[in-house]
Amino acid sequence: MLEGDRLMSMPRFRVWLCATAMFSLLPCGLVAAEDAPAASGATTADAADDHGFQFKLGFEGKLNYRRSDDLAIAINPPDEIPKPVFLRTVDPGSHFELSTVTLTGDASWGEYLNGGVRVDFGNLYDRNPTSDGKKVIVHDAWLRIGRDIRPATLPQGAGGYVKLGKFGHFERQNDRHLESWGLLSTAFNRFPDVGLEAGVDLGRYVYAKASLTQGNPLFIRDPNALAGDNGTAALLRPAPNNVPKLGSGFVIPYDTEVQDVGSGGHLQTSVGVGVRLADDSGENGVDLLVWGRERRLNDTVELEGTFYGGDLDVLNGPFNTVPLGGKYSLPLKDDKKRETGANLWSYWGGLSFFAQYVDQKLAGLKRTGYEGELAYRIDLPVVWGLAGKQLFSHIQPAVRYSHLDPQFRGGSSQYPAPSVRWQWTKIDAGIRLTIVEGIDLTVEYSDNEFILLNGLHRKNNESLMTLRWKM
Image (tube, rainbow, N blue to C red; front, side, top):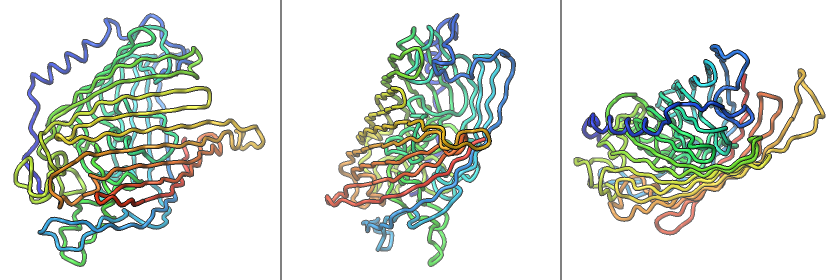
């Protein structure tokens, strides 16, 4: 796909207007006279006798065994591309791989000034948009003033926060119990964004959040562990050396990693309103959040690791010469990207449930989906110990169901990624065993089924085993 024009910068008036609206959400004081106790599960640092500056360094590594089914599906590519052409499993077969090594830093100054940074090395499963993408990336880097309460817990009273930097979307599920990702979490909120976020607790039971961010570029990837190679430099080499490292995968449109901070473009505005109920222990509660966000898509976004452009460029197909409606384009109608959704968090002792529904309009194309994850933590009796710590302290089974229904009717039948039109259902099931504090093993299986445009059902299943250790 050919690149379009350079990113257009956002009018200053809109930036000023959005920022003013966000700050108007804040109460006169960022924190109430009394904060929630530590048991409430607030995401701020635990209260300590010494409220001075504190800093902690951390380390996390993930060693994986992955087995992916081998599948190839013939497609009808643009006329300029020699046939036959196939969509293929990204990396079939069995593989042992060190997917990620992560360094973390957490800092606090008192109870209401906090910051965090996370740097990923290797970044195999989050290397976006292709295997030629960045191998070292700052995953998170943020500073927060005020009090941010985690879902389904109650503060003592009114309060709020402001957060600046690179951080996850406020509707994202942060307590996932499997290493795999569902269809919705992959498509809409897998990767952090860059900008400003503010939240306010309107008493104990109602809250509101808003953000003004750069917006994650739109691209395509396989929803299994590896993103796949689409538009990598290998395709530009003469045959027979023009074979990418990885297969294309069976891709869906998704919000990829923010790569160049402050590169211009159209900023994204997000708002959400929620209601929550919980007991004072913070172990049992329910939280419902309704949210929405929007931005204008750019004609193109340059992404490291692919010569395809993001945003409208990837939807317009190859050999396009106009911003909308190229020869091999999807049936694009405008340059707007809008999502509305609802989240539900529920906790009851060791049982947790998360659900999300999203309705999207992508350049005028409608796409809807829903996802739910159920997990149960079982504490095991003390039988063995190691270095003064319990061996095999608990086990946690989990199951996730996700469904994605794109309604991309019309457009060219030769758009080179027909999988973006397919209806998808993904079931992830697994179990996590805590071997010793800081070390756990997760074994899971993904049943990934899609329906082709001719009505045929196909599967691209995957097994994943992850040994994770944290210090």
